[in-house]
Image 1 (cartoon, rainbow, N blue to C red):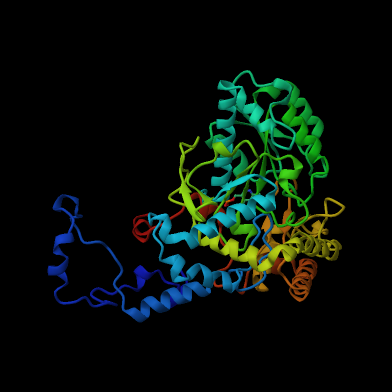
Image 2: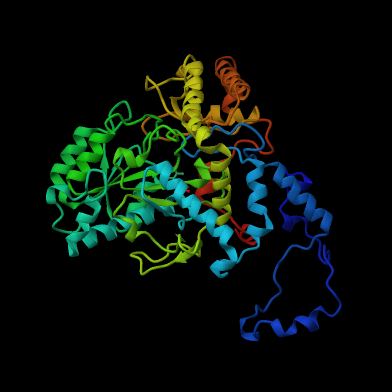
Length: 516
Ligand SMILES: *Cc1c(COP(=O)(O)O)cnc(C)c1O
């Protein structure tokens, strides 16, 4: 293995007896009462690395330089919107008044934090055109599961109590349960084949059965196939899950017809709002007829994500479904001017620990406030403009499978010139050499060489132009020197890795790697 000193694992830098700390001399005595019972203690000493402080600090500092984040450079990842993280958000989330709170603190002592929580619930409801939000779920997929649990509870209640359907029907939109379907349990979830992989996974975890709805050649939902499915099994359909604009960045032109058809059959409409930026200020899922949705605060509202970092996937519902949301919820007692935490005997109880990831909520709220009512309207149009600008300027070199306006993201099907054998993977790897994060590749599955680019609304024209130039340079290299592109990256700390090996045989501990 060819590693520099700081490319070693911390275990490999270990020298017996070296320390980076010193403890008080009476440490043993003062801590003896806290010791674990003999029976629970390990017999041999823990095999921890032994290093001096400088070695530890340099090791981790150097590792951090091998990382690439939104603060390092352009990050055009599609479908998983990766935005900049305004510094003011970090400052607000780190304020002692917030960071020092305890989740079990009495409500009277943290009214400010509860106000933020309450206001975010309200802001999201307004942006989405829905009635109420829970901030409890901690990720997009967690939100999907929560939303589907809400839907399942709703159908169970409908089965046992016919008055519930009247309550939902009292909302201002096409009423689910119209048409009087729904005699037995509703166990099926309709999901377009272009959906994000978490959609079918969440439905399965929720104990529901996934039925795939086909896409047309242009990537939109095949409404005739949907009609056929509803005719076959309409009274067993719990919900249809949709992403709109879909994962190709195309707005579903027949969305109103789709929501009406599913409602007529007695199913509810679920909206995957992980990436809501294309719509912000332009239109709202509630107005399109959706009943339940989640939003990824860590995509749409400015917290970068990845590597399992903290997320937040609030779930919103239409009027009449609030009673099925999980608890706790923060409510305002108008008379007392006090915010209260309520955990009524909800249909679901709690789906996460305490209130969810409050730090992510603070950043989202700060982002919404700093945009303000006026500028939030610019998010969708700017995200759309940037994506279409890239689409038009790259289509001479990159194969555009679907004509027409896209929304916040654009999908190419690899290079136009396939004769060189240079693939989407090669282009993505070569981008790393030029200091860019790779776009999303090989998703969606509708094309062989999918290359999905999302610039987001936040990038300047100069940044986008520089990226376009590099994409053209790579296309030219693919012709003049295909080997150069096929063996990229060349300028990164490590060269091309075997992704499949890492995924199939992960070695996650040093000692295991020695034993292997
Ligand atoms: C990211 C994403 C999800 C899942 O969100 P996580 O927070 O990663 O669980 C679901 N749907 C779409 C369209 C997404 O982009």
